[in-house]
Amino acid sequence: MDLIQSYDEEEAVVSSPESSPPRMLKAKSSAPEVDDTALALTVANVNRSKSKPIDPTQHVVLFNPTHEQMWAPIYGPAHPYAKDGIAQGMRNHKLGSVEDASIGSFGFDEQYNTFHKYGYAADPSGMNYVGDVEALKQNDGLSVYNIPQSEQKRRKIEKNKEEREGEEKKEEIEPEAENPATEAWLMKNRKSPWSRKKEVVQGELTEEQKKYAEDHAKKKEEKGQQGEAKGEHYADKSTFHGKEEKDYQGRSWIEAPKDAKANNDHCYIPKRLVHTWSGHTKGVSAIRFFPKQGHLLLSAGMDCKVKIWDVYNSGKCMRTYMGHGKAVRDICFSNDGSKFLTAGYDKNIKYWDTETGQVISTFSTGKIPYVVKLNPDDDKQNILLAGMSDKKIVQWDINTGEITQEYDQHLGAVNTITFVDNNRRFVTSSDDKSLRVWEFGIPVVIKYISEPHMHSMPSISVHPNGNWLAAQSLDNQILIYSTRERFQLNKKKRFAGHIVAGYACQVNFSPDGRFVMSGDGEGKCWFWDWKSCKVFRTLKCHNGVCIGAEWHPLEQSKVATCGWDGLIKYWD
Image 1 (tube, one colour):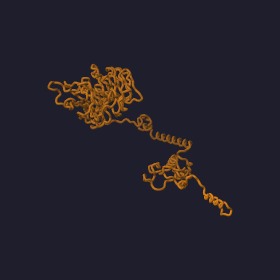
Image 2 (image 1 turned 90 degrees about the vertical axis):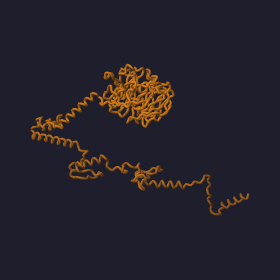
Image 3 (image 1 turned 30 degrees about the horizontal axis):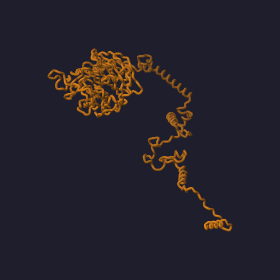
Image 4 (image 1 turned 30 degrees about the vertical axis):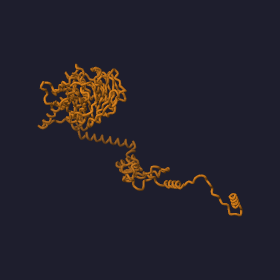
């Protein structure tokens, strides 16, 4: 009650007319107080910055700058990363920022050429001329690019008139010009196809010139003879490195040991390195085991040599065959191993006797052979097929040395030749990213396989059961095709994981068909399970590319690999 009473008294005092003037009470608000100092400073800075050029180092602009601010020159300290203080993004010239001049490039060229031709030019301001004033008045201020057509026509007429007068004077001075045998006639008729040609009387040759002419004719004749052979000619040579070519019983060194037999048909993946052959001075491009027995290993090197190595006993090089002038690309044994073929980059295919090292015959078309194959049938061992760099597969009869057939449907160099269907057909792959199936002896494609997703396939191998082809595709996978009538792609089987893009790494099967193997570009040898398509094992074999891998035909767990490091390795 006391509080209410005191409040009423205070109100009466405030409202009475005799009291002091009325006071305004402070407004009450439920909203919290806000400090707007920072906002006011920001607005002030923005207003102040609108009159300054933009700093090129800042990432955000909080207002719309004017054209003058955007193109104002940069002042202040030098840019920390530029010698001349201009940021890299602000440059349009190697010396900094260059602005367009008040005269365009065409106008500059016009005035530059006008000044050099007539001696005067327009000032860049366009208000005045500099240079020869008299020439300016005489030409009415014309430039080299705006001469009127009438003036051009007049000058052309004058020029033609001067040329005619000059020719007439020449005819008066040189009456012999009508005689075609004279120099004057040749000069006058210099546009004729016989112009400036004059018969030169040959004097007597000196002894040195005669000798040079004889040597030149001799070289030309030799070159013509080589052109007839179509391949580069090199001397064939062979060196035997073993102790003796025949043993005490008179058996040749290429005969297989009597105890070389398969223990069982089950193959195993190799685990360790057991032997290394090192004799090639450059990379090894291909290796082949001796057919059926595998007691010898043939290797083709980029050092132009072919070597044969002992596998069972000493492990040494038995013979070196030298007959190619360039790197050897491919090799192929005959069925009994007594002979073999080599294909080199010197455009020659040579047929060798394995035992003696003699070259039986040489074949060439003048193109590089990429792959050579003998017909696997025992009664057709005289038929040679070669895939060439000129898109053809050429068939020779070794006995006669004549070309008996040419298969020329491919659009790129032929990389592989693989016989299928009991050797009645063969499949070829090429750089044109296609597979073609041929009937042997008939140059007509019976099956053409080409899809947009296909890559070049530089190596193909047949499964031991003869029903499947494994093709090394350059998109880092191995594709499987059936060898039956339709030659379809088996989409369920695909072997991947290795890196072979750009390398013709050989793909191969184990003798029992349970494993697929391939080298790769990183020097590894990969083994996959045929049924599950999973990677079974990877071996680091070579420094560089592991280009070839061959499974031993009798030893179930032994594999030979070769690489561009010049080594051949034997794994168990």
